[in-house]
Amino acid sequence: MATVSAGLLLFRRTEAETQVLLAHLGGPFFAGKDANAWGVPKGLVHEGEEPLAAACREFEEETGLKPEGPYLPLGVVRQQSGKVVHAWAVEGDFDPAKLKSSTFELEWPKGSGKMKSFPEVDRVEWLGASEAKAKIIAAQADFLDRLSQLL
Image (cartoon, rainbow, N blue to C red; front, top):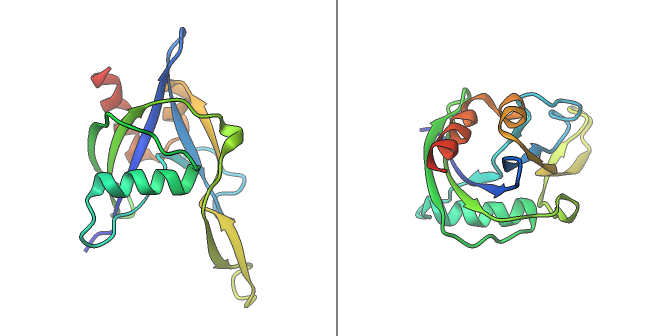
């Protein structure tokens, strides 16, 4: 059975363009990577949990921001790994310098027996459509297209 995640795509309108807030994946596997290392702040949907509730919870855990709706459904994508991701867009603003991400533990370096703590998200950035498409995890690019169609 596929892993199911849910997240929120925060967007803001500027005079020049609509921008989205993307999160760079934390941890050693994504350090130094840019393309395909950014995505919608998201996380696992717990058993019995509504995906939108999980999206809101995970967004707050990964950024420190608790956005308020309305939430625009962006549908579902399946990533190359098989993970199913539900997403909603929500309009708002956020100062990337105020990022407060939850952490996870990982044996690092692998095989060392030493556990190290890493942030789920190590940074966030406001990006325009073309830059966001160049950086986002491939399957999640559909969320950008869907948001564009809604606005």
